[in-house]
Length: 218
Image (cartoon, rainbow, N blue to C red):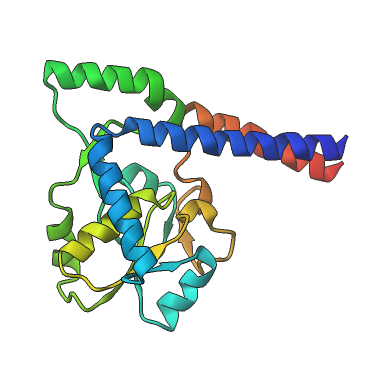
């Protein structure tokens, strides 16, 4: 019974992550432009211009190599869980436009994506680079760029590289791939690896975690 329950929980968590990633990709208003930036970022990573760093390597990169952790998640994700001492400049911000067309898009977003993921209708932060420059004007500084899944931080790292930053790291897989203890101090009410999950999927996740706990106790 316990083996079957564990198998069900693992399959369910995989389904939650797959649906969340699909919905995140679907939520972007300009997918072709973002896709092009993602390809460019991958090329920078493959060439070694941007260094991929796993969550397990992140603490050593920060403590020994001098990397500063730059959290690019939207504010509502960071409020749930964050690495203590990290900087925060969101790559995407809530779209505050209330024109009829945007309101229609927001309604569709809420019905098909927002209710499931808890993500708000967003737009690219037009001041992203300037805000990072205000926080860290030294473009030789070592920045470890991070987000929940790794996609947004990949785009952010590419943007920073274009802006003149040359000592960049990318948190491969994002905070979702972090295990307890990978980062020395976490602030917030949730586990870091679950901070991107919201809406209906959050309650679904809580049910899965409860079933896992019951399965382990049996």
